[in-house]
Length: 203
Image (cartoon, rainbow, N blue to C red; front, side, top):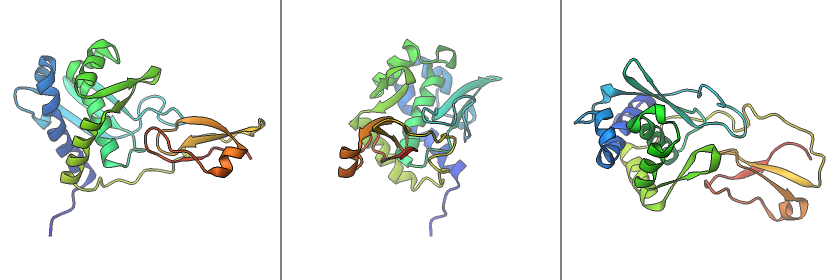
């Protein structure tokens, strides 16, 4: 019987699997990860981002460099293996080009080369189908991500609904939209991230 991986083991194997793609796309990445992908260069764990970790527009990850060691934090909200791999790649791209560049052009260029699209001012990444298929294949190889997300509404305040449009939010990424009661009776839409919308407070 195959031994079930712990969450930390799963993440460490994911880093080893994802990092070579970044090395192949940029010389800076090769310098960050070394000529061979060594886990000692990157520490990855689950933890709340330093800012905006909760709420509707919560960040899903952070990357830092501390004493020459790359440290990546993934939000506890992430529980789907494919989404975890996508966010891990997002954060490792920061490490590859240098975290000091933030979401500026070096990082954007690498994300685009890897098959991602940067969405607006929130700097979230939508991975295109070829890359998502690779994430799906890798997820099957790694097995189920051994983590359960906290309640979707953690950190979201309830407000009194006063308009005729009703507020609904994606339970996965927090995307917020307003719909009329008429359309709401026909059913809730599906978010662009694939998550399901839920009523977000009020009546």
